[in-house]
Length: 364
Figure 1: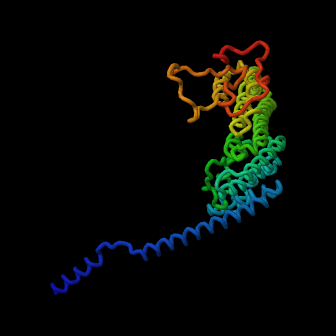
Figure 2: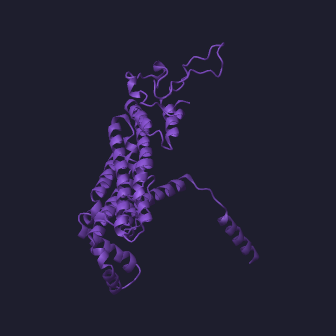
Figure 3: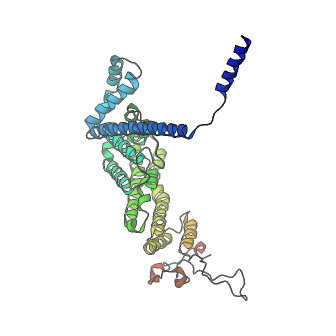
């Protein structure tokens, strides 16, 4: 019996000894992992297609959008929570005024459009001209429909991955790098989606137009918001109303000039150097009292100063190491050495000093 026991122990130890994976084992496991991955990707793609088809049908009209919205709410908040249809009906009746509002229905259509575009972005490798164009169209339509969307800023700012539309199709975990999950606020949509594909020589005119649209939209947001606040708060004091009225004026004098400067710098870097430099110089001379003007002048100087190259000759032995050929100050010839700059500016009158001269900081 003791001999048999020892034999059994020996066999048990042998079976428990660690083993390395064989090449065939590794290949089999990798193959199974590939199958699992492909199966999962196929299921996700199928869910994307099914969701996108439903979204496109629902966004066709306000009535379709709110009907689909109710179906999604029912599934997420009631069916999946094992709540009765009676409870859903009672909730729906309490929401009747909101659900009947044309503004809310219109906002749901835009929410669906942005969600559909987000699914397309999730399937792409990054910002594309097609995504840029579609995003620009949605933003343009939102602002064209401004009066039809009164009071719906919250809906338009909600991340589409958190909507009932996404949650009903289990897409609420969707994340897309450098992609805003809502069409508002504007800054991220333009900075991350609309503008990047346009930053090249071939698209520089479209880049400039896109920037002009952005600036116009930003102004509309401030103006409409201030106006709606005044209309809805007639009981406010004169002092409070004055502050709201000053918001638009502040945008025009502070924020808009900064956005215009960013536009021209963007176009300059995209390849439109001559025209952008012309506009930047004029912008500087018209906004010398702006708090950002010194920074603009410094940035402008850096942009137009020729970069040193490996072919540049070293300083002569008699020259002082710190001596450099000074670049002419802004307001005269912005190119100190046309040959070194690699691009002549034939008509330097576009940089003529305005009547009254420049502020001292411009010529330091």
